[in-house]
Length: 632
Image 1 (spheres, helix red, strand yellow):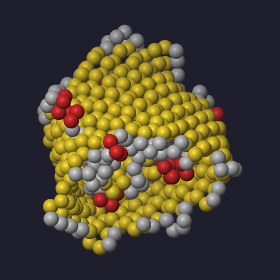
Image 2 (cartoon, rainbow, N blue to C red; image 1 turned 45 degrees about the horizontal axis):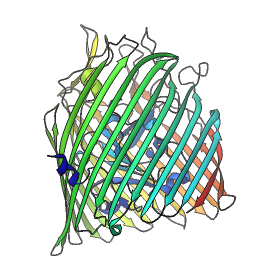
Image 3 (spheres, helix red, strand yellow; image 1 turned 90 degrees about the horizontal axis):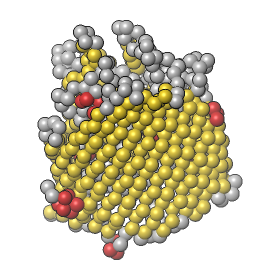
Image 4 (cartoon, rainbow, N blue to C red; image 1 turned 30 degrees about the vertical axis):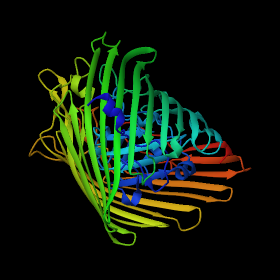
């Protein structure tokens, strides 16, 4: 494909414009209503984000069904998110349409660096979505967006202070009109953290996160076209307890890291309306990340990654008799670069690697009258480092009564090996395996949806099989660790139930429960073991209520018992982590139409728990602050 053709079609990335609450932008290549989404989706809108008031996006994500969150100790430390029992690098994350999985950090998204300030919407799409979005969308997709910059002038500023010397400052500004606008957001989070390993006798591991984003959108051509650009920069510093260099066991060390991520995306679309017979979009994005590790003031190592992506998408809508069809064709080119260097091993880890792929995507959405809707997507990835792959997703929604529908989906997923998996990083202990192949999965889900204006409910059963899982292996002769594709097939299956109700004006309640059976089989015909850090039972309650000058937000998150592995012992035994409940609440009162005072509490029940064996987590914390708002 020539670049000219690529730029003439539309980008295979979620749209960056804010949409209505019941519109989903990441469950298909075009926006669809949540009731018509061919995948199971949770939408966290701006009202819920502001009512709960969490500084971190990860605390909002943990309230979605099927999502498990594991933080390695203190706030700001490494955090992993798993959807339906998939691995941490099996979730593809978009922020304003930019893929934020870090190529310099094992293809995982750095959730500990994502501030909730400035977000207007979060979507969580569960199940394999690689037929639409490609590698890393094996477990699901998370799409976060900043608000639309169009509309009236509006600005906010927030200041907050609380436990463990936590400080927070954020400001946002939207200026423009109905045809063009610019929005900008800046936020700062800093805290002393906790002593995760020393039992209160060691040093606290603090953190600091700075985030800045800007989005500009213009809609010329009578409002039927759009051009836009968005950029985001994140700087995250955190201290953490690592391992003793002699015993390789957990220790109260002076380790620290700095992560810097910068990204920009531009797009142009002609044909915006949902009924436009033709729509064409061109899209391009660039992301650069750098991770630097040190022990005290002594530099240890550094990794850098770059991702450049350009693509296009063409949409045609037509009616044939009583049926309506949407045909979508997309093409995408992606190139990644990985660089590693170190002081710790005198340059022994220095390397520079590249890889790329070209993808061709097609999707056919059809409404066969009022009772049946179908969606079929096919994607072919042409890799330059691996064998080419084709993934498929097919779904059907059958309306059996007003507001009641049955949903069935088959989906396939894929995830490329990380640069660490392929080429290693730690000399004398861990070497890579350049012969790895991508991980793949096949999954099914079936569910019942009931949607009314003031009430909705959904129950979904799912089952996924993971093949060619990349696992760690140890050579007892050379004492080297490496990676290999497992010969067995891992299984993840379960049930999700979700209910949302609006019993009173201004009051919204949500509740969900997830049962998960996740088993890992590394050797064909071998024993299947429970996956670590994935609870069998989990559930959440959340509420937001606005009544005059008063706004209330509250949440309860239950995380059931789960397994982990204690590598401080040899041979490393499996240990059991106990269940826990996290409670949070925020109360805000508008002193004047423009000034709001608020108080907030985290871990309200002071639960003593661990997400990762050996690492303590933060106890009860209280905060207070002011928010100033101007305009709509």
